[in-house]
Length: 395
Image (cartoon, rainbow, N blue to C red; front, top):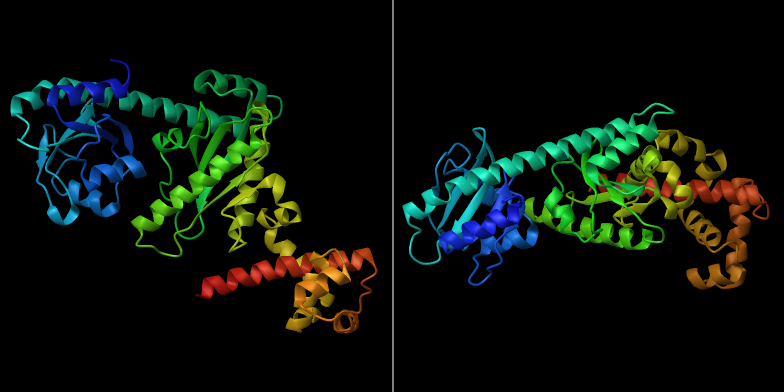
């Protein structure tokens, strides 16, 4: 058998039991399509593409990581856990994953378990080969990202042959809004997300997980929505594992679609979009480079310099008057429309005109001047976002 799903189906058939295959990080790889009377842990594995840290620790306490033969794990009513057998999937003596068979009725016979050990070894070999291919593809992605000028076309051709990626792709970087990036998404989880028929490749990134996705002409919107769904699903999983922590958020940045040889440009955009989202609490968890507008500048390596640059004397003076700063931001957000601003703030126009006069007096700027409006607007938007970040961190 050349397919992991075929192996799992055959093990399930021989044992007459419901079977799942997880990699050594307890992420779901495949499962036999029998869902009758599934216990809570099996449902968690299938629906969440993995198990919680508490469940993993429970299983590992039975020595499954060192086992060379099937290990029986007793049921646990408190965990809504049925008795099951863990069959280690090894390759060249190294555990690559685990086959789990649930004992719904009578215990599975030792003879039947011995009969499927060659299948477990085959699963281990397949997992090892898949992992090796993923590592090689990830290496080629990084090689392309670091390719010198003139060498990108060759590196892209090598990556395309190894990964099956088409000529047009975009890059997403998935990270954490607080704490260590951690293992956020597996290849199996990515393949189940519905992002594309060929869901792309994963690689490590300084900021989290780098995802290279196929993107045909006109398909950006569908890919962006699928990424948003994936981020929401990952955030739910992380919060569940970490006890509902408010600091356990998952965020992502997405670059523009590019030719495969131009991968680095989309990658830089995705990282800057991620950095921008991290600075904008309360906004979308997914930052799309093409939709961030001027706020892109906050996500780059010069973000702190930008903050210093927009804190002009006029902006600093206005920020000392909270009501006037709020009025100025509403006025500038409304494109300088007095009617719209008065409606937004619930003010009489004469009251608004009075405040606008005070804003000009405090800042020394003429609001009829486009550059003056740009100075105030950029400063207020940027520093308001930074202030939100500082307040959220204090909480």
